[in-house]
Image (cartoon, rainbow, N blue to C red; front, top):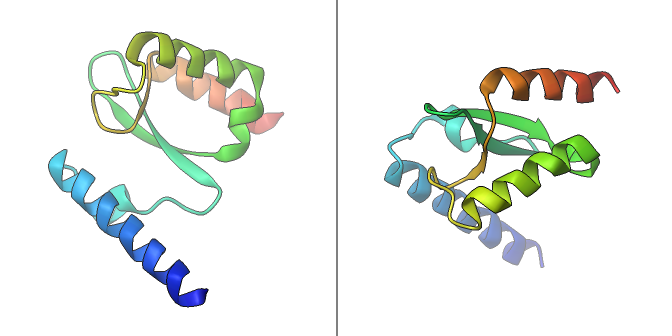
Length: 101
């Protein structure tokens, strides 16, 4: 069982490297996402990458952003990851408020 999980972890790392290389974003920081977090891309013209806690997925305000992302992009996100269609300023304000609650 342990060997199989290690194989899955390696496959995940390879996939992340492949996707990052394809998008021209190869660096140690673009591959590493801490356990319990996920990466999203935010911005109206230039997409900036944010790593946020998974717990945000349960909050109604963040779910509204996810619904907007689904309406705008469906499952075909332009930068290969989850893209949130809002301004960087709004996203920072929202995540700051979620962090305090």
